[in-house]
Length: 311
Image (cartoon, rainbow, N blue to C red; front, side, top):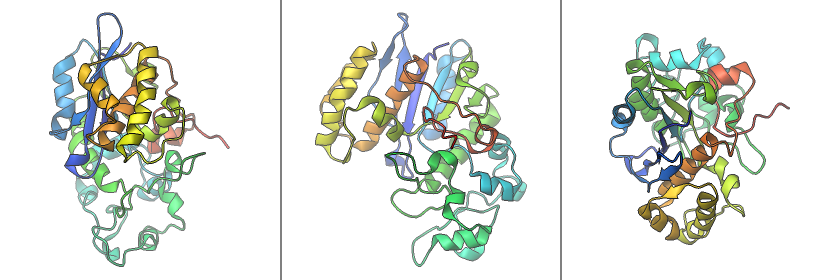
């Protein structure tokens, strides 16, 4: 079934870097997309969606943050499934998991995020403490270098402008884990199954997204310099064309911000791009591209719409 609500959250470490865009399914079986807004209360996002859909409809929620752990780390930690692991974080042996290590001596299997602050910190410290040889071992398959896309920053390395670890900590600790503990109808793609199996009455399906994965779906030319409003304005023309061709209605505020090049910034831009990507998937214009390998479906997770490399 088509979800009654589709949400996409562009996720950052700082609260001001978290933006969310949504779309609603109308009686005519078409989506209306709304302008992105700052996510003021991230802890209430899933509960608020539950209040909206109750038990009749379903919702599809995308987060631009890692949902899963690297297979090499999972082997060291004795983790065979990510979802029970996520639920257990903060308890017993995992009580320090969310505390970012300040010194190499504090790094451990149960406290893998490092470093808390810059200053003579090296990735070699992290590898040595975990007994690994290559930083690529701390990348999930979906985070490794892809054609036209460089490798992502490893989950547990929390230094630099492109780090995602501290944002993942907030997302896991304050959004995903509480939702999974409090609501049995909150499901994680791909860990709980294929998207077509999960979207059913009463469910809230959460998926990992990556707006850059969607750029090639919508933009006629490679997107370079999205921090510039004129670049976003030019890209916006392609978004408007796609929405028109896909019969997606745009509320006036969204049409304006797209035409103006998302003056709110590139976080709002990515919130909208990710939303359009999710709509493309649920309306059948794009494949969700579920991975076939078990380790990706149970431990590492996957990015919605990214094709699996079987080489």
